[in-house]
Amino acid sequence: MYEPPRGLRLALLTVAVSTGMLLAALDASIVGTAMPTVVASLGGLEIFSWVFAGYALVSTTAMPIFGRMSDVYGRKRLYLVGLGLFVVASGLCGASQSMLQLVLFRALQGIGGAAIFALTFAIIGDLYPPERRGYVSGVTSSMWAIASIVGPALGAALTETVGWRWVFFVNLPVSLLPIVSLAILLKEPSRERRQQRVDVAGATTLSAAIVLVLLIAQWGGGSVPWASPQMAGLVAATIALLVLFVRVERRAPLPTIPLELFRRRMFLLGALGSFAFGWAAFTLGAFVPLFVQGALNAGVRGAGVALLAQSLSWSAAATASGALVKPLGYRWMNLIGFGLLLVGYGMMWRLEPGISLTAIIVPMVLLGVGCGLCSTSLLLGMQNSVEQAYLGVATSMAMFFRNVGLAVGVSVLGAVQVARLADRVGGVPPDTGALLLGSVDNPALRAALAGSIHDAWLVAMALVVAGLVAASGMTGWHAQSLPSDTVGPWRRLPRTQNSTTPSS
Image (cartoon, rainbow, N blue to C red; front, side, top):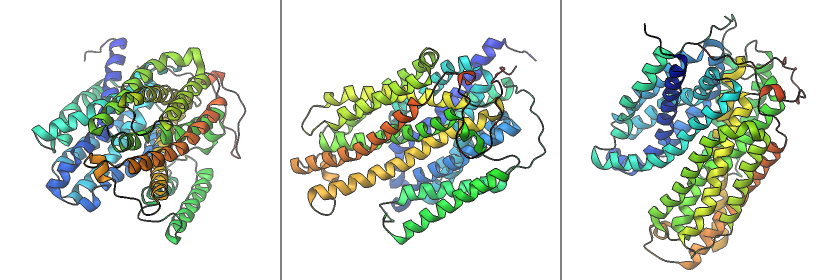
């Protein structure tokens, strides 16, 4: 069989896994545009939010499991199984005859998405040594920004021309490139055969705890009040499951998440930074359109322009960040990134109703550049703080903490915004639908809405400060330069050289 040159093979594999990441990232942005048409076609308005929540819940739960299993059984099979499941579920979503079917098939799609998110950067880590991972990971990370630019427009175009079902069917032909390329070209190094069984107890308790965390984030302040016995029960059950998970992992011969990794300073700080980053960065998509349409009266197109400014700058910064990691190091990359996030949020916080749309462009660009710098450097910091045998779980944990930060952040900031809006108008939160559509003009309500969003952004800024604190403790740009000190109560993980050999 013809064997392409090593350089060409690496290029083709990089394009293949980047295409897989683009597919999964597009799925997160393309579906929202089509949902009003889907609801009109299938009904089920009362459960349509679970089209998004179910996908997020399942994918976040499965990420650490895929990451750990890939370290033991190899990445190729698990990635191809996950991508195949994602494609099959996409076809089932497109063929759905009811909203309940769509919710269930989206949850199935979330399992495949978890494999793509967890293993894409792990495969990149296998293919490239630490000093080259930054360049490639930066390009791959930019797929998120590209998807956020292309997704809404593509979703609208498909829905208006060939129908909403093609929002899902389009994944089928595009997936052929990564499936064929990886099946033929990816050759994994031999792995040590381990006799231990998969950590079923750890995976089960972790999954249950994550489900409860995400349900708390989804329901808190809405269907279940924060100060209620039901919420107290959910929180208590979550804490109990996490305690049980720690006990199980400390005794498991092959744990789902090796707890000793959290004794590594870079791994622990990277996890904290990833949570803060997910909270502060990804919640912008929920509140910027609300501010632009409701407070600035700039309409849907204005909201699209504001988000486009962030997406373009995010994509450019993520692509360039890989080359900047080595000269700047993780500490300064993240200090600059979180610093730009803080400045951008501060500028947004000072915007008042009645200003022009152009005033929001500069802070959105700063926010986008900050997101691009942090997204790549946090991932690389966690990857390069561990040995090759733990690369999969380190990668998946970076994505996991980012997703949990997003889920919890949207819930908390939404609850803050709604409560502060009610306080500012002196009672029950008003119906802002007409204000957002531009059919009425109420300056007092616009001012109240803007103030409530500012209050939510103050909370987000607190998480940015937490990210700055985490970044200040980082050091180095690769594993060999990391300090040997560790923290926490778990046993010391042996320090070995992180010599990553590209698979061939």
